[in-house]
Length: 540
Image 1 (cartoon, rainbow, N blue to C red):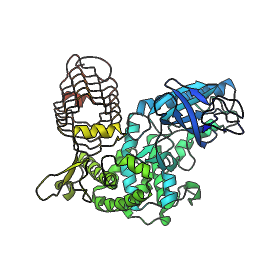
Image 2: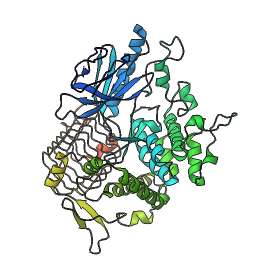
Image 3: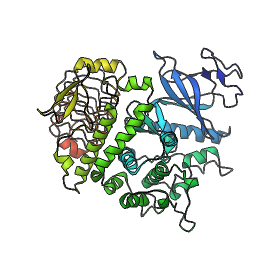
Image 4: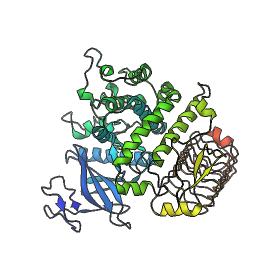
């Protein structure tokens, strides 16, 4: 089916082969900078515009995408100019932060017939709002897991000087492929055009959109003075929704202070209650100022056991509800339908332990002193070579061969999180936009490989051969690159916050726009051919 983009069309549904709308005569194909796009169905509509599920008619297979149409509330030149600037700012923001595995990539943006269009990567999955309505409210363990997954993402956004301003359950999608949370809708980010420039009625559609969502936005944001902790407040309100299933308008509030009264609706530990109360403090001065502060206050390590149990229950429900097609896509490398879920728990535990060690305010726990073990044993399949790390089989790692990995990638597999890919020869391989989070790639040969936009967060790349590899916009936060050969590698706009570069060879590498500090680079080998983040060559 083809769906008409004309907001005034009375019968927008058309046949899949139609070039023009049978009702209003509007063209059904959009011509952008990177392809031609056809809307298949409408996903949502509001005063700001509409969102469509679309497909790229130029690329083989007509891959799916999301088409976001900005519809200005008027035709006056001032309104169109404001809409154009708002549109361009969102596109620039997505281009700036779109190298994170939990943010949809910007694929195209253009103007056609005085309408503005953004084309983004399509994220298959359900929003947290849909998830709560379908499976019920979260437990305390579920909320802690949610915070541990989203807070590092918020930290990443804030590090790039971006305030999202519209965090809510409807803007968080649990991706079907790997069950990771993805944050969408960056149309309300800070530094949009001034809403005072054209606002005759005081409540235009664009004004309402740019502020955020009432109830989820804190008082200072509604007063057009957002700060980084405004996103912390919205995240706290989202937690209350996950726990109660109630939106802010359905929650009682204190008429004296304006604070919502939620404690009596939930059964939480005193510890988590206090953390949420501080996240939701109406006073910016008393609220947590950053995502790391919340992570520090959560002290997640003591709750790993209960968290893992909660996730096992949750994953069992998800497995039962997964469609056959989703099952096939997510399990290309495994016949065990629970492998991805269990792996997610292991990733979460490792991430929490690493963060606690970074903060340095808690002694090493028994979990840190013992080897990581799977929650449930995985059976050997014809694709995965499962190897025990010791004689009694106390630890198993998923080990793949180069050919199996490349075959799986060719079939559409993009999730190799926590896999053991050490010592493999993947020279010149195309593995772009792939999830290698927490994977083992020690001494792996990736010379000349295309790893653009791939996620190597917390992965081990010790002594890996990445010479002349394309790591543009790769996510390398907390990755271990000690002794890695990165000579001539393209690391432009890569996110390398907290990555270990001790002894890494960056001679001739391109680091233009990369998120990396001088202190990190001081530990690596560079020469006069190295292009530093500021675009200049050499040591200074």
